[in-house]
Amino acid sequence: LANNNVKSIVEDKSGNLWFGTEGGGVSRYDGKSFANYSIEQGLGGKNVWSIEEDKKGNLWFGTDGGGVSRFDGEVFTNFSTNQGLADKTILCIKEDKKGNIWFGTEGNGISCFNGRTFTNYSTEQGLAENSVWCITEDKMGNLWFGTSGGGVSRFDGKTFTNFTTKQGLTSNSIWSIKE
Image (cartoon, rainbow, N blue to C red; front, side):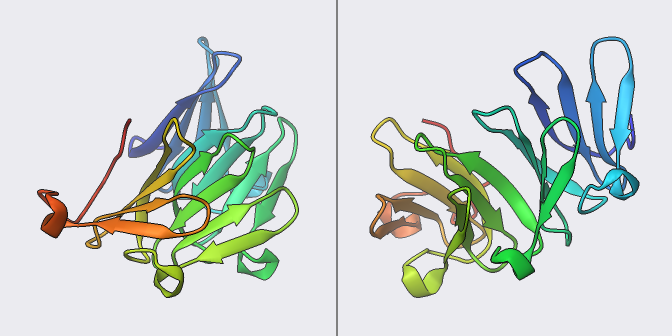
């Protein structure tokens, strides 16, 4: 394992376990041994907060300060603010049913990648808070964003609806959401 401080874990379609670590990049465990990937192999950052495997089998790694890295099994492709990503620190990642990849950032809202371009959303568009810790999609196709102090935002593809302690949440800091 690249580092004992593990921040995220995903099992890919092949049964490999991927560990995002603080300071060590990413480790893949195939059931027998570890393979480590870091900046030297093309990963965008050494701190990996989130991992998501898309429908095509690409792995996406959200890093602290290095944007997001897509790994196709051979090569890393890095995306940052220069390519349109809202922030260089990615806390969470979610692929929606349409194949768009959503990224929650540390302080600049969310980015949606449609395979070609990024669309960014923040409090200016109605998001409850710009630090987004988690993302989930419900059965109706709504996206839910848990924020750091702003409660929860539900996005129906057009508008945001926000929920806070005023609507019954016990806290406005939301670390995870599950339907």
